[in-house]
Image 1 (cartoon, rainbow, N blue to C red):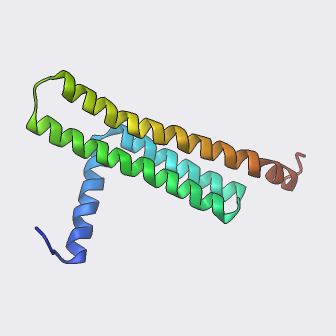
Image 2 (image 1 turned 45 degrees about the horizontal axis):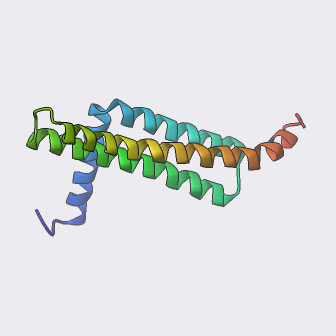
Length: 126
């Protein structure tokens, strides 16, 4: 499996993303929220630093959800029975996604506070 051509490795990555999309409702919701964030960026036209911050936040949330899903699949395969430690590990994984999601919301709110007044002036509301 090591040292495969780049194209093959890229295919593996897209297969993983596709599997997560199909199997994880949370990933689909977060991907749609990332598209909503992109729409907000297109409408508000903030400074490039806001584009970068929002893109990084969206990517981190989606990446953490991929990691969460992958580790849960491995855990379920290796230890299918219910065990308190396994449950806590899964809860911690979900907590990591939640923490990054809240941080992303804060970054989005900061962008709105920074960008909304200019946008409202431009469209004649302020």
